[in-house]
Amino acid sequence: MNTYNKSEYGKGDGTYRALGEEQGVRALIDDFYDLMMTDPAYETIWRWHTEDKKIMRDKLVVFLCGWTGGPRKYKEKYGAIGIPRVHAHLKVGAEERDQWLECMQRALEKSGYPNSLVEYMIRQLSIPAERVRQSCEKIHGLA
Image (cartoon, rainbow, N blue to C red; front, side, top):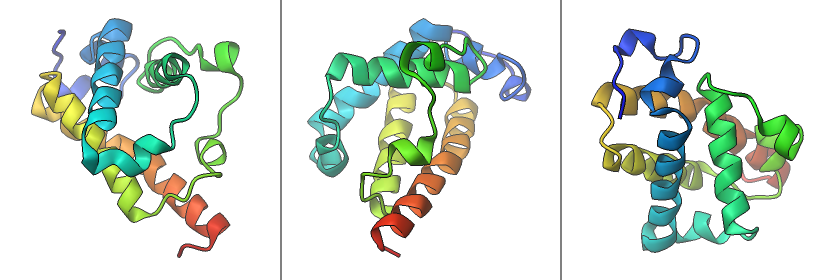
């Protein structure tokens, strides 16, 4: 696994490289979904994943690669994405948002990334996770 100075996170492809590029992101996402699938604490959010599990994993890998500064292939492979829009059919409240973030944090920690990268990723992922929560609560009247 590559390690980079935390000052590189968020600059160019610094975060992507720190995650180990596509291979590292793919391993992270495998850990993430394996944990979600097997730990009863994440049963609620795991049940939402009804599509082909291989495609589901690949979508998050391709998205995170581009989102962290690596190759941006999501649109050409899966079409345009608007994170709140693609999650609008789900009833995501604070509890579900927090489950997703906790599961991701555990996967990042399991992958052996430095604490600085784990903290950076969770801080950054909290932004779209919160937008999804706000959007879903508005759509479903959960607020």
